[in-house]
Image 1 (cartoon, rainbow, N blue to C red):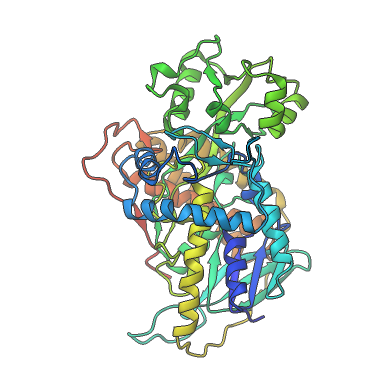
Image 2 (image 1 turned 180 degrees about the vertical axis):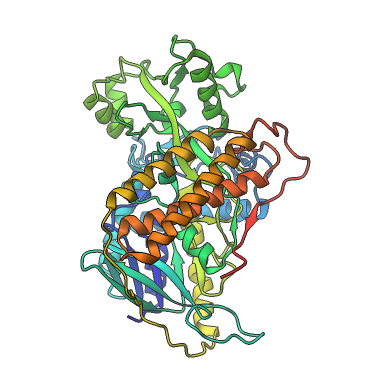
Length: 532
């Protein structure tokens, strides 16, 4: 199967890029492992941050981002992405996204933790879903785009992996992708000079996460195995307010709720954020998550409370219809009752290292959205900057890929078909479930909000043993989605731990009791596979 471009993932990053490159006439395939709408984007409640008000300005948005990033942001990247925001908002509106407006017709702008101004464009509390639906409608109308649902990307094919002898001047560029058709249980070979990774995050390596089940770190794992650089994977953002339930489900309570005046209270009902930060409940997420963790440990409570009972039911139904209804189904009327909340793994601030055109250290390989690390988020993502980054980088990547395809003379390369070899069908799926449970529990217990070197070393030892077991299983049994995901998750988990062990300081989302101070000079943590 031959395409000019293959996009892996169907969230805002992948869809935006696919749509723009298809409009240039390229033949584009979108590969998504479940339904096309099963994405992190579809679960995004809060909104997209951009300067669209006369009361706001670029310098203020840049400053807020840099402060949240705790000294590790790339300021040039921050400025370019922030300044490109308004144009991309305009294009989203042209694509059919109807952001919530006020009675006078102006955009309704929310405020979230870390923002000094109201600048969050939203569609009530289901912004991601509205963007996803609008872009999917545009995708369906474009004849240059083929969507492959229930197709799971396994591994990238580089020229070296294809068995080509490289001379000194040649690059080990992308020539294809192996993809598992889950409906027909067959591996397909996609031949392409360009792969865009838009696979989302890594939340499912943790026991408790706000992410959907598709967030298994596939893009980071594939890129690392192919030899691309990955950066700053130690910075895992734990969302401070996920709805607590004894079943383990963690429904996200948007930061916009605190933006509208909600107050965090400990199990005794005391407002506590003033003891941790002068910004109180609107402090950045890393500070709020650690404060909640501290209060829970101090009082031995399973959760804290989030109180927005000063708002009327009508106001809450209008502004937060999804949250209101979900809580009501769980016996909580948020206009009268406090919400029990806990932190949960939410967002990967590191990822595949890219330039501002989404290019990676492998020619023909691009990454966009949560899977990438552009330098925007630094050590802690400012709320609602993620959707902004996705659309800006998708636009930049469109121009870069157009130039790459037009100006590169590609040497012919025979891409080998997938071979299963003499292997058996999996006969002990319970092993996969057990290994997944061990992985997620280890990451939650040892690589969470507060870390120590001893805990990290214990986690690394356990997961390296698990990795060897899963690798043996991978090579000795026919593949299936659960095995591919587990293989990727254990790879990413080990990379997260190695990155955390390499950072001998506490900065942003990485807080360790062994190195509580911040180093005077900020540095990035870069990992690259050295042997193949």
